[in-house]
Length: 274
Image (cartoon, rainbow, N blue to C red; front, side):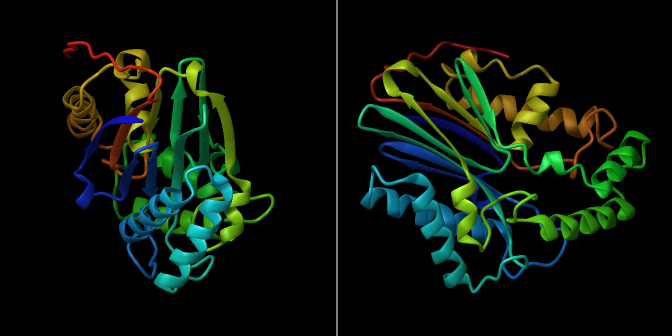
C-alpha cells in the first residue's frame, strides 16, 4: 500500500501520529489534556502506534480489534496507566490483506472512500453541557481565554466519567475492552481506488473552507496536502482567531491527512495548485 501524507506541525511536535506499514497505515490523534495526565498524549499515541505496527507486522491478517486490544493492554502496562486517569487517543487502521481492505475506527478521525464516509460520532452525541457552554462563549466573541480553558477542564472530567463504558463512548486509553467496541468495516480491495484519512483538527476546517475535495486530494502530492493544512491554519489565525465562525477547543489543533492507495490500484498524480 502506498501512503501519501502531510502533518502540521511535524510529527515530533504533534499529538497526531501517522504510522505507515507495507500493507497499511495507522492514524492516531492523542487527545489534548486540559486536566493533568500521567504522560503526554503524544507519548501515549506514539507508543500505541508503535505497538500496533509491530503486532500487525507479525500478524498481517490478524483481527484488528483483537490486535488493538492487545496493544492498549501492553501500552497501559508499559506506561503504568489506569483507566479513567490516563491520556487517550483516536485510532484508525487501514489494512490491505488477501484481497480485502479492512478498516477500524475508534474515535472521531475521518475515513473517506469514493462511495462512503466513516467516522465514530459516539463522543459527539453525548452533547455534554460544558461543550455547549464553551461553544456559546466562542460564538459570543469571548475567545480562548482562561474561562474557556477552565470549561475544557470541566468537560474532560465529565468525558472521563463516560469513557469506555456502555452508554458513554469508546476510545483508546487504558481499557483494552474499548477495542471490541471499535467500528470495523471491510471492502474488496479491487473496488477501492483510494482511502482518505484525517484527524478532526484537519477535516473540520477543511470542511468549513470547502477544501475537502477528496477525489482531488487522492491524486495530490504531499506538498499540496501540506498547502491545504497551512491554508486552514492561516484561516484560523487571521480570519477566525477567536473561534467565532468555527467554534473549537483550541485556536490551532494538530492537523494530519493521509491518502492510502491499495497495491492493486496504480496511483496517478495531477499537477494541482491552490
